Amino acid sequence: MPAYHSVFLDEPNQQVIGNFALLPLRTRTRGPAQQLPPITDTTELDIEPSHTSYDPLDEILSLFRANTFFRNFEVKGPADRVLIYGILFVSEALSKIRPGNSRRDAEKSVMNVALDTNFAIPGDAGFPLNQAFEAPKDRNEAEILRQYIMQMRQELAMRLLNRVYSDGSGQPSKWWLSFQKRKFMGKQL
Image (cartoon, rainbow, N blue to C red; front, side):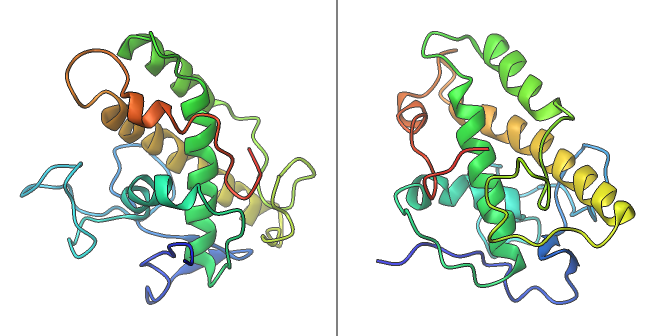
């Protein structure tokens, strides 16, 4: 069975830096991403890929569990690289949530990771998947990519926390925590 690929592969007029797509996001976080309209007729947990506000972060969270079981992932385009990076970030964020953590404690831990400005981007020596990603052409492109990824990380962290703590008990979902130690493609950020 093949891995699940991004539905945004055929997105027209994608802005690309290196070979990483800068896709529109539904976010309240400042950054270079084009803004999608907020959800008004469904919930964040139930949004469908056909919805106008569905974005790559929704896709990352919905495909995370299925794609973590694959050691190999054939990259079909720039949108798949967004999916790969997002899955790696979700893995890292989940590793910061402890089974007994309250939402507040988990939020501190996960947001510290999301807000950390010392993360590697494609082309940096410490980036784990440089063989699948191209480096930005210049410093300006690198800065825009860093800002986009930072925006992505912050919004993804908040949405992940909403899913991990969605049952209202104040305790993290055992289902989500069962994926803490899984490595996507044998890598971690």
